Length: 380
Image 1 (cartoon, one colour):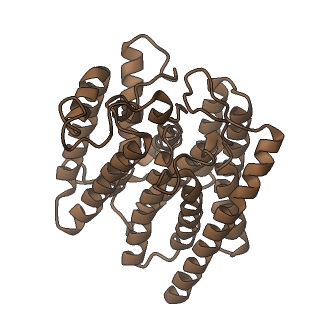
Image 2 (cartoon, rainbow, N blue to C red):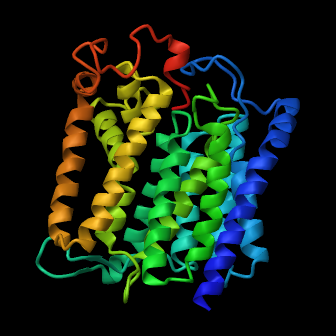
């Protein structure tokens, strides 16, 4: 049974990849014809209109394959309903910006749907501090809702450079897939393979490479919200007790960077007297861009950090590092990131040292005369 599910999952992932990669050019044409594009202007510095419809291709394909494959069991229908809600609200916001409280309210509703009827509930945090397991008991549902909203909002906020949000999502799903294969979890494997295949197909058109100078389409709010929801769903499900496929602290490391960035932005904005959802240029990817990295280099550097964090969190447990050691390091990194982000200039200087003192010395990753239109896609 296990081998047949694995083979089917590979076929489903390939089908998802082909449908997304092959369907995107047609979707782009239809979107441009309908005027559904993210136009330059305001804080946005991309120099041409780009359709924000990546999520409207990836996630309908995921749902269709998942449902018709027969793997969408009873507890998955709340997930599908929540995805539909976030796709609708995200698409509306992509077409014409809506009030932040409406979008945030939709995130809360979606989180409640997947946590309560969907059963995506965090029962324990594991042995985080070395004094035994931390069980949430009556706090499980509210804690899970808050965590799910953090997942959703974190991916929405970090979607600011071509290939970044999609790349983070794909890396997270690949780590989850590796854990499922290692622990023979055939329940979660099919869905993870399907969404990973679709995300890889999307990145073919969104990731900057030597063969692609800029994104053909953006993930859009519909995409980043749904991506955060799916990451949160699988992060919780893969760490469920008893017999978790992956310990909670390993999951925290895999999804850590978006959480770090989200917490840092809220902390900085509140201390500056701003609304926590105020859009600005204080995200980690902005620090890389302001330090002279090109968008492609920014994405590559941040995905490298995500890959390292995932490997450290997952393989650290395999190699015998105690959970509480990983937890204390994770917490220290979170507060260090928050402290640095409060003074963005310090972060920019730190990142510049990765390229050379002023960004022009030997070892620099990019020329210092990068034009503004090359430095950011300007989406958050």
